[in-house]
Image (cartoon, rainbow, N blue to C red; front, side, top):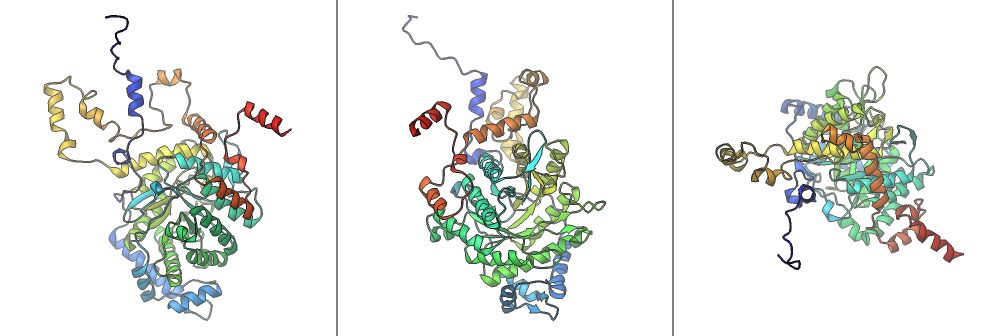
Length: 533
């Protein structure tokens, strides 16, 4: 062979083959996908469901809800509610049944990028964040108050997490004491940080109206917003047990008029603001959310509303919330069943560990809750990543770790595909009679290693020697590196600079533009300073 003759290329080595196999798969080949149908775990029997339903109807008809606003009383009595002499609104069974018949079904929750649109009906399961944590817990275990920058950073991480499908506000920006600034900037930071569907909350309808104007600008106009609303309102319209929350109700009305989907959220705490008996707590929650459904449909029949039974749990020794308890998993799974019973898009909560840190307790509680709730048929599973201390603390590192836990849960949702091909008779026959006696290099193994099996992002499966050679890092340390990588490189730019500049001109945006862009290289920064001198 002459020196000018090209050398034959060697087959790619193990690392090259591994890199090729680890590349992104087309959506239809991925082992797990958003919105896979679930429902294999059913803590309630059909008889149980019907008894809870009947009790909820009795509660609405005979106990009713107190403290409705004047506008709420007008809207709901016009629809058929009865106002008692003590000021409670009663909901006749026929009114509730009529509402259930006309309530919205099969509505899409849009992302700013259509790739992230969700179809949360039937028993399709999606996982996302939520909460109102007032603290950030960092990788060292230190707690500090959460800030608007934290909210934006959480959204940026969610934006690239494969198994987290939507982003609802997870922390309260404690550096914004003014209620308008907090409401508006919470929405702003959320929609600027991700193209996935966003959920947010407001305490005043005027704050919501300003946010809607911003959302119109981002969408390209009010008509475009109404065609594809990419933000939903998380609305705690009740104060359990069985009372309306005035400010939230006013915001609820504003959301319906503004074309914004609404999460009707009742969050009674069993043993505190709901009965200690789990069945009773669930019946009360169902009644309260049904009242909200009547309210929404009395304003606008068929408006998109999520059946948000978030049944929380008390540690009865102290009265404190216990978000990581097995009872929490039972109640949230049962809540998913109740929404399925009504054929409504349902939202519930899972993953709210009691642990203060990203430790073994956190992983165990989250994995148990996700396995049960994820397989219950619940559509939208909130609070599923990053949350600690029963909603009081939030960890960016846990957000990355929990992405792995959710992915594993989704793999259990998908289950085992049984077919003539997957039963593998010919493959077994060939390996045993003609092959090496193992399946490691078989064509089927290589074909299925990406589509049948899911691999963790920060979970470690190496041998002890390999693990030691590569630094002996635990999951938290690996997640810390991943967080740094994302926050140092991922700056979403889906909202154009001109639109953002107009929003900043019209409204008091508190998140600096410089916090939403990569830091300039040191040489570039020096040149800029010299040029401005």
